[in-house]
Length: 287
Image (tube, rainbow, N blue to C red; front, side, top):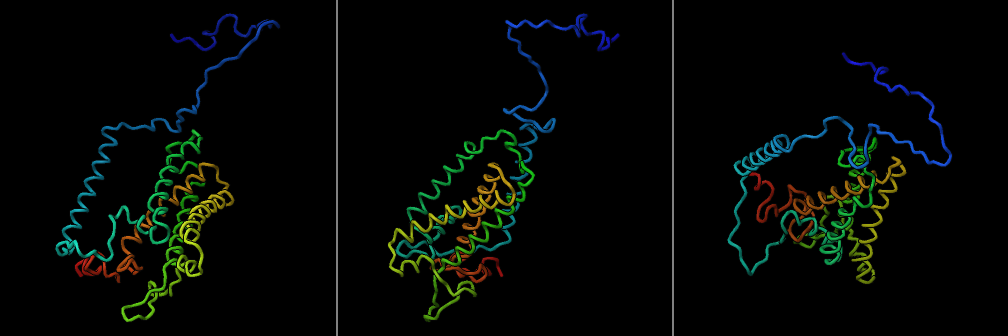
């Protein structure tokens, strides 16, 4: 027969313990709670790698393979002529995963765009755990109450500024008859770096200093805004900066892939005569 709580107590329970002044006393207790090393918010929040994780990855791989197969069957990708070593294609584009860096080459010094920027980006991403040392919420999506709002605001902020900077730095273009051509049909072309060059400023100023100031100033402004608007802590600031990095990568890749045509000029994708090389987008889609 189970004993009650009162029956399990020792006989001297509740007895006053004499205190001796020459001794040092310490009160210890073992309690249940969250640990800083490995916080848990929900019981059973872990799953096994097999089969839970592996099955999800296998399904994702099958869906990707199916979509890729359907695209290869339904979309007529035109074959080009045999490569001619004496003639360089125009434009000559890098693989899609490097088109973001190729886009940067149009707006700053090649050493800065091809070496310094990607190297610094990798270092800063690796430094996130050393800057944001809060152990709570690590690995948890949308940790704070304003995380989704911060990510959404950062995505919109980055998208608007990136597109504006690309369009503003697109210089005036002319057609084959020498007539001025509007960029994307609405922008006469300005070319910030070209204008600074025409003003007689040194190369390092408009090709190195101006891009560096923009790349440092705009992220700093983003962090200030999320702190001011959402009272973001260090985790919120990291979410904002990482969101801005991902959106920047995506926009530069999309622009370099679909919006850059002959002579690396800006075109709408459906007007781009080099998507892929030698075909318009209508030909690529089989229309």
